[in-house]
Length: 267
Ligand SMILES: [Zn+2]
Ligand SMILES: [Zn+2]
Image 1 (cartoon, rainbow, N blue to C red):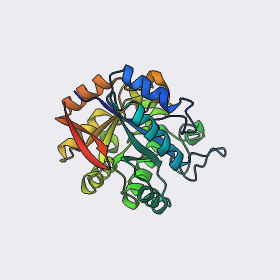
Image 2 (image 1 turned 90 degrees about the vertical axis):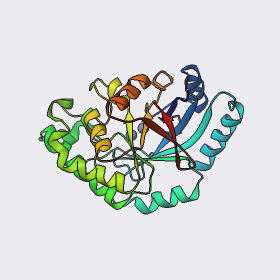
Image 3 (image 1 turned 45 degrees about the vertical axis):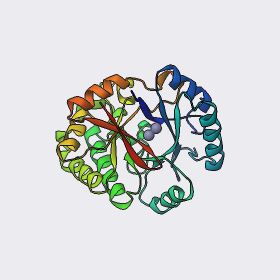
């Protein structure tokens, strides 16, 4: 039985201190047999001079080294999480062409040019206004750039709202979310179920199951499972719950990507 966690960070990401090898050990201990590293590249990240970038050649060497050591226990894949902004499509396309990535996640980490992780975005505005702007930005970014494999944590912004999910429901933003889902299906982009939302006490994964259900109803079949672990303890966290949610949303398989092509796991 394959258990594939395809959204995991290591110390190649600016916001993680966990050595790649420790994430591999944590994954093996948790019964994961396919692990995809998706460290952050967020070109032109706007907050406080933080740079989310790393040396991809070094990253590739470390992945190949670990792949060799642990090959009997786990399949290790090379992915990346790209922070989307309107002007970055060309740079990301080149990056994906230049290196042999197995998998790429496109993630919207900004709203109106700022990361909602920092509460300034919410000052003087309702959660509802910020969430709407976030989905509008995301829709525009997917329109402009869609050469990635999977859309990460579609409703990321809700993790950071003043009242979290109180002003959020799929229905309240269905007009924009449906447009985003249409584009994913048109461009053959997978949607991710990101279990970090469950850990962060919003009580559901990102996106909300009703969004996943809607994607399935519209004909989407490509879904990946990611823990978004930055620490060992979070690798494959709430994986079984994610599988149950996918089943209840009408999915029969989830996917992981090798050389940017999906492989399907029956659930
Ligand atoms: Zn992310
Ligand atoms: Zn991530």
